[in-house]
Length: 378
Picture 1 (cartoon, rainbow, N blue to C red):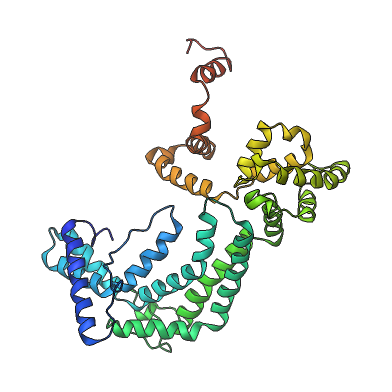
Picture 2: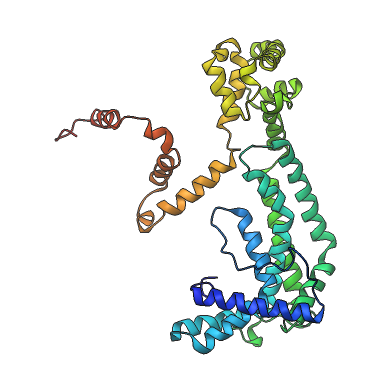
């Protein structure tokens, strides 16, 4: 993307070559014509914090693969510098290898399986119930791909390579890494390398990450938290789940609190559903804010404690994404010379800048001044 889409001239070349290929395909009858079909597409740069953009970038690269190769060949011929030509040559060599094509299609299939989950986790409204259902589906699909989809997968990769005139190695031959001599090659076959070392390994890592992040306990806790959501007239409310939620926080809820909660929840839900100021709320944050304004946090202290605990959990992935974005802004040469704690403090100040903007600078200066005696007054 950095080389092919670096200038308007290169982007125009991509569009023109892609247009010519589309016309040729239409004339040969390989693709259909009609309203809305064969619209112009271009390469897309994957965003650092937009997870879904990687999937779309890969899809576009696969769709426009031959066009990208053609543009790289043009750059190799008439590049502005030897450095640019060298980069184009290296990319041409790598893109037209079986290993790159194999990994490209593997990434496409894995990101395709997790795409709906990724989108659900990034939405502003946290539909936790559907997200947890998608987690289970993703685990099953990834496991099924590992156990049963190798034959179909390698067939699709081979077919793509044949279309793009990329050499397909014999799977029973000895595998030799690029740039290595055959005498020093590992004593493994191409089949073992691609199936075990790449296909199985990558899928196992994906499954392990999902299992680590969404354990049975975590999933159950998130489903309990979803019952606090005020959206659609507290449609998700489930008394048993909310009582179960207290079991995850034994130090926060005594036996008396749990006994009080059982009756308090009945009164709370009747009050919320009958009060017009709570009927249009969309998330837990707005519910907490409205309860404080109406002083209902005092009336329902145990329920409010559940809401507070729900708010401090890192389920707001939009906030996580903002943190990654902030990390890219803060990370620079200075990052190599500071400790993790300082880095965390900087990120906290940047991500939560809306809260910090409401704090008077004079208060901060005075607090810092009083921490110890100083030679000069701040």
